[in-house]
Image 1 (cartoon, rainbow over the protein chains, first blue to last red):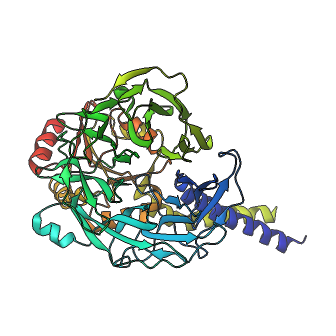
Image 2: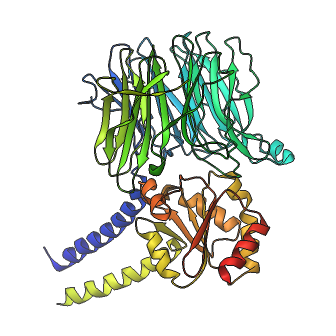
Length: 400
Length: 163
């Protein structure tokens, strides 16, 4: 090698390593991980793998021990923009079609996109969910497919900001759109379904046994009280008025960034979990309702108050109900679980079922129709699917 | 030897060339594990206010003009701002700070994927709600308050920690 080419190579090396280190520094904080997984009708477990420029999905036929080759969802690169309270979602319908919802920076930051696939081998072109996607900031979109094969999206949208300014609030609206699933999905026009919603807390959705969609959100009540309300979207399209269901009186002019969870069992019982730091009640709680959410059982406290319990998820499968939440002791994050075999009346003691000493996603509960699983992802241990079973758990807590 | 000399000179020039870019980045410091302790060292024997916010927090944004005003009226007050958004949101964070003329303050952004650990290092009782304001006196005794604060609260608390 002559001297000139040696100089050239070294220069190249210096320049490349300089830009590499800058790139690494820029990329480091984005090693975010999320848990979005669902079972298909054939028992396959599908999950989302986000990267910085695209979303992929893969599947497992052995309950998460091994996964297939990933398939890209968006063919054109786009900056993916997710955060803990704005995670991607994956759904599989009863015909095995796969639906993926994610957020990416387009004309607006964290624009909501979704793509669908007949069998998970090839995905449709990304579809923007909001009719104002290019003009108005929107996020925290939730997706659900109902029993009549309609796909629903509900999201937080700032498009009514001027209206709120007039009213003097700092909150926003929930918008909704739905469509019939099929080869091509044509979204109907979107519409506002709720106002005065706390801007930073995820909303929870579940389908009631009568086919209506039930939405649980953290509302902003007069005096800046951030408590929860429910409302109903009937199958005929009627939008119900929201009513308040938690009365903890958490007064905060700010962002709890901590949304609630909702599951409706086949017998029509509503199961709800939520976080609050209210005057009247503070911590993580569970309650159920047998009258379509008009009244709820006495809130049952969840988790060790000294370990920041939060991010509760609830899932009912027949009479089985599982609750999971996160705790943190300064070093370790643990997912703790409780289990009920009688629809939430009696509960096992809490126990730790997974742990991590690195960054971890919010815990999620999923089912294959036979049992309930914790679906969780952490940087040090990777994706895990852990059955939540009653086994030898002692039933000690009572919720009535 | 000539080559070696050349390389030394070249890399020196290169590092100078990259300096302005680094200076710009310093406007928004990366808050990682240990950064809170670093802050306490930097402000040893000095009172300061740590204002924790997020780009997704409408209330935080609404209160920025007030912070701007306070920082101008009370130039002796050490105001430290920390955005809990991850570093991928740096550009959004910077533009909000510039828009509110708060970019000259001591500004930080969360830059560790394990945000819970960062929050815990600041305050083991804090669940992550924002805005969260810590009034830290010169002995580093502190009061943490969640939610937006009124001008009166700021003025009262500031008097308390600076006297």
